[in-house]
Length: 407
Image 1 (cartoon, rainbow, N blue to C red):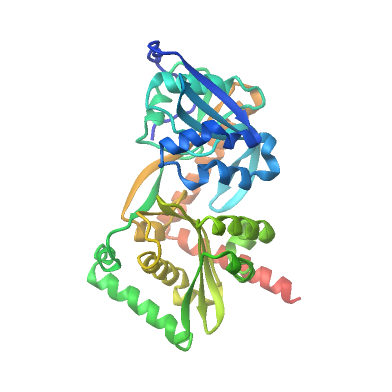
Image 2 (cartoon, rainbow, N blue to C red):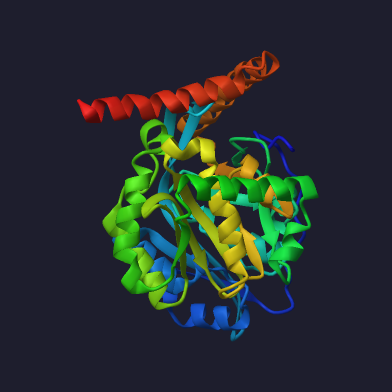
């Protein structure tokens, strides 16, 4: 990956002058106004997480920080870029352990801007974004390295004085391009691998006393019980105890899933063994894709590969109900995403920060500690200790928590 840290850039192309473009900034409930409706009607490619109606619901408690840029040319709305003014945590890790973090007040773009792939259009966008003084800079999340915007940011003059910092190297973003049938999808695996996967399902069925079932949750009436059962599973995971992640806001989750269900956008799953929930998956779905959001399984069932079984059964179910074109695994790498995915592209998070002492210090320290962490992890890999230590830390976090609860 190119090193974005304190790089320079070349002069941008001159903006178009054939017809004057204007850029409008709207806030709060105005994000779902006329311009948004025009833009969405003109482009059905706007994903669920960028739809104005979802943004207003999801960020209802912080509407004063929610905004959107709209690019106009005459009466035509040509561009749409929602954003949130938010304090981002630039975190330094050693493996999965967060050592420390720096708070950076940023204009966080909520997905890739839907703008014409023209230098002049993005000149308008970034000049306007940098004109907002409420932040220390800009944050672009999951920016594809094959995108027009990625290349633009390396060769424009509008942002050349900013600190450009990518917290990590590019990572692979995995998706499944859903074929016609499940049998066709399974041909991506060798016959030996297919046999292994089916054997894992049978092994779990046997352990469940032949009472293994997958529950699909899409209706509003199903949401409350689903969340209660999923939270029960989530509280047992290492993500909950070690990383402070998991389903920690059940009432908010219920409200969001009910909102999605009313619009046909909810798609969640519970895996039951002998009438006991042992794994869950949260997804959202629009006409474009099914988006993988979160997953968790009961560590007491680890020997039966519940995560793998759940993923396989979910993929099989995609062909039986509202089959999407794409199953999107979302941000973050993972062995199961690589295993089940059919294609991928590379992406990275990117900060564009004003050259102030706090931002420069935060990026410098983060870069230094990340390099040291990479060296340590590399050493553990060479000694064949990385996976062993990771398993030990995860198991210890869950065991320790269970012991504390029993006391």
